[in-house]
Length: 115
Image 1 (tube, rainbow, N blue to C red):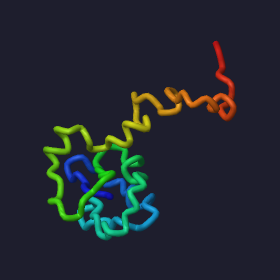
Image 2 (cartoon, rainbow, N blue to C red):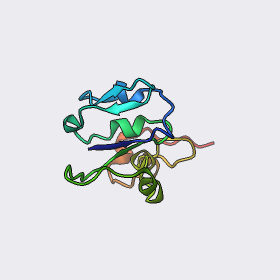
Image 3 (cartoon, one colour):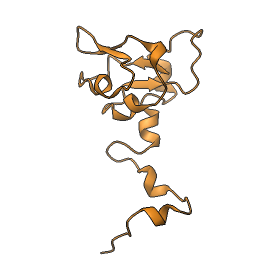
Image 4 (cartoon, helix red, strand yellow):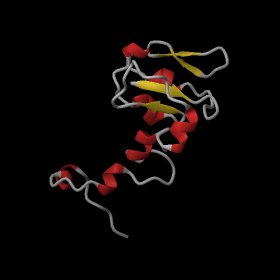
């Protein structure tokens, strides 16, 4: 579930507010999204994927009884925006499709262009 929005990294684009399918966020008075309905989060990672500055952290196995994460720990553990990096979204990142070795992938992808 969504665990953290970095006010230091956020650029107030509100993409996370717009793309969330369960309306978890509200736009804060300062423009920074607020996690308003965390219990509605479906852990779909869409917000984290769309965040252009890696300001969000969605925990794949969140425990609501644990304390909220601290930004310094998230940065040290390299998990802010880690899903976005995993799927290859963002400048300079390897796209997941480029490294896919699924046997049937060649049947559904268009042929590679050479030259």
